[in-house]
Length: 296
Ligand code: GDP
Image: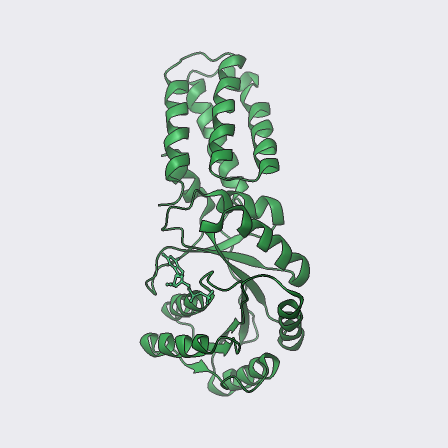
């Protein structure tokens, strides 16, 4: 599970701190040195770590902490608060338009889990009494269309596809007409991915964005790719303007660097977490619960 290494290290550090009774500034500094190392080893962005540690030090050496009866405990609480803030503070939800359909455009690189996540998100929304329509707009990877159709069948959710002959803009526009005609209140567009970001991909995604004006553009990124995921998010955000991120494969042994850096680096909140290959393995991302998972 994600954060395992980080959680072990931080818990050891804080066990020592709690056991110490009164704290000196040197004790706090020593603990923060260990926290810094642990975060860097978890592949958290260097600048993010630096700012994080300085915020904690500032709060932790204050009088209130030093004079409290359980200063160690107090420091852990500060770290918990700051970890929560780092991941966005509170849960970020997707915007539901007051005028249906809400259009959600999923973007991302190949292999990140985009198509699977489209299915998972549709399933999640269906359970909330929505009527999603899945749209197969990845026309370059023929298997992607089939994959989405199979997912739709399993989930009993309609899939709109025009094969690979029409362009993604036309597919997306016609999908919205179909949603209006059949009262589908959420349209989830599975766009094309590539192995790497390139001009052609971005141009295509910008055209789809322009044509259908999505309420949510969500980037699907693989948490296992660590800082690469953060770079990808920065790039997509600059070019497309993201409303949020869906971080996949948090069930794997990702060190957690992506989860802890993306919001701070890009300003985009993580809205959902992929927790497995199964179609019900998508969860709203709760920064506070993630922080508690790290601190035990
Ligand atoms: P795409 O190329 O981005 O559309 O990626 P796919 O949806 O085809 O997913 C690529 C692989 O990642 C598939 O084997 C998925 O089952 C797997 N996958 C997607 N999300 C998750 C997740 O949250 N956890 C795990 N363990 N596997 C995932």
